[in-house]
Length: 256
Ligand code: ATR
Image (cartoon, rainbow, N blue to C red; front, side, top):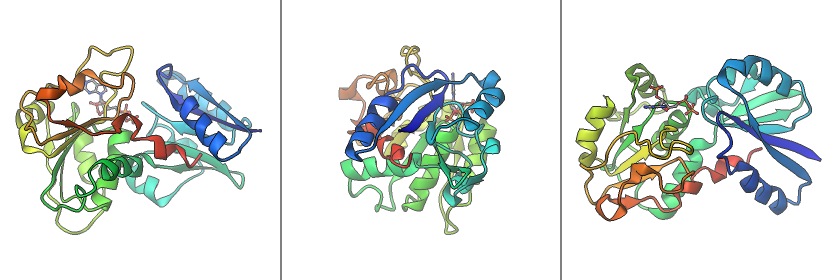
């Protein structure tokens, strides 16, 4: 019997046990998958206990994707470049960290909008600068996006993302405040909300308003509980939802 789970805080909203249960069935594996709530203030103690236990692997969600790193034995090259981990596996006696958030998002985007990534004129804005944002940022650059801006409450974290060394050719990158992002929302082809703002139980919260959005703009919120966060606003007036976005991270689960 394999033992898996997801760590985060809060974790009550997570659909990961259901999602990974499907994967276990599809892979004909005998396993279990649990939600494990770890508050940031107890992280060192709780994660040390978990790593000393008998789990085979686990996913990492908000707000631990960067905090987990010093506790692991090794990161793969992708997670090292991104500086965040969403998947941890116990392999050959070592805890190895991976990041599949970004590729999961890019696959969802490609599925719904096959020509988007290959178009050099597409301009993308990422809202937030935590672990999830880092993964998505790196994957979008790796897959060919050439204009990629980041807006965050804490500007230094957005600056840190913009300096992740992914490609050496010329990329247009700007760092914005959330106010600037709201004002300039109309100039983007894709806006991705990567913070936990608006997630249950705080569904009334909204990172910023999309009242300046252009009709062509695709909007994606990586929060999937609720499926339609307040961020989207009223769909008829607010551009196009990225179909399948609530499940954008499903592929990220496969590695466990
Ligand atoms: P994760 O690594 O899982 O993405 P995180 O590192 O805690 O989680 O990042 C959460 C993101 O949500 C950050 O961009 C954070 O902004 P700060 O860098 O300023 O902390 C953003 N965030 C969380 N709560 C927020 C709020 N109430 N308003 C604006 N941004 C918020």
